[in-house]
Amino acid sequence: MKLPTSLIIALLLAAPTIRAQTAMAGAAADTLPPRAPAQWYEKMRISGLLFGDVYWVAAHHDSELEDRNGFWIRRIYLTFDNQLSEAFDARLRFEVASPGDFASAANLDRPMVKDAYLRWKGGHHQALLGISPSPTYEVVETLWGYRSVEKTPADLQRLSPSRDFGLALRGELTPSKTVRYHLFLGNGAGTGTETNKGKKAMLSLGFEPDPRLVLELYGDYEDLPGDTSRSVLQAFASFRFDRGRLGIQVFRQWRDHGEEGESETIDFGSVFGVVDLQERLSLLARYDHMFDANPEGPKIAYLPLHARSQSNLLILGLEYRPLATVSVIPNVEYVFYQASTGAGAPDGDWIPRLTFSYRF
Image 1 (cartoon, rainbow, N blue to C red):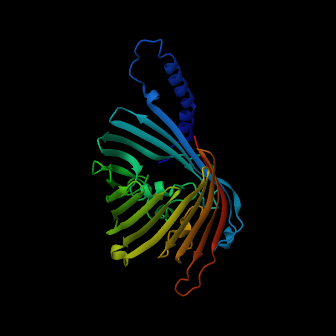
Image 2 (image 1 turned 120 degrees about the vertical axis):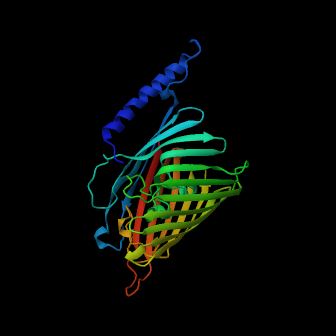
Image 3 (image 1 turned 30 degrees about the horizontal axis):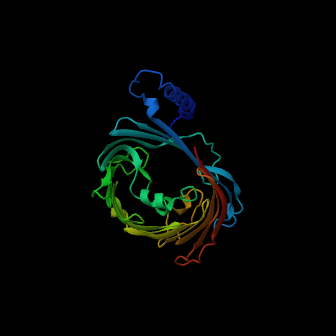
């Protein structure tokens, strides 16, 4: 859902006024009679995130991309959170992104809606209506913790969107909060408009027997046009220790093409690790292995992959945090391929980068 840049600018210009009014009201609180109920702007929280890279395509299986280099901002998020009452709150988040296709000369002037939902909270349960994060890899992305460096594997490989429009129910099934759930009934169109009668059902079940251990099982089913469908089964586990965390993920997607052709599967496995070397310095590593070639590979932004070969992605990085809200991360992404039927393995992809991010 695209929005005019003028709306984003207007909201940004309004933010200082809102903060000033809130500060003046607080300063006068001791001298004024009991104040009236808080206005909407006093309950509004505005935040943002920006990240990008200095990059160099040192080697690539597509020779036309070799030696490409430059600077780009990959994402800007601007988020508005409003506490409507004790039981209800709402979020509106805008996103601006570069195309990442090494060809488009587009400006960062086309914001889109990333989140737009109303949430009800009661006890251990929540209900969200609108565009909200899907349960596919919300937990995986949180524990990976380096969206600024790279998306989680299912998101990167374009196997499932990170958001959907629909009704979500989530919460804890036990008083101790060791068992949780996230059920989502949505369009299956991500943040786009619904264009068919089919819908998508998603469910994740999480188990945290110990604060350091997270286990999650996820599945979904999407009804697509033409008697076709897609479904996913995924398992994830993470262990947090004193100076870091480890995670492992396995994923399978079934693609039923109906009468159009034979069904197929796409499988991957991924493992990551993060070690805090010092208070402001962390080492990160990740390895993804695609057991099947991904026909969507060439469309992947910032890291186009070969469409007919199994890929192996290795990520290594070192994060330095001069401030709690600022990160500088020298890192490298290296992709090597396996030989496909009747052909040798494509040349590998080697992309050193200096990633930067900050919150505001």
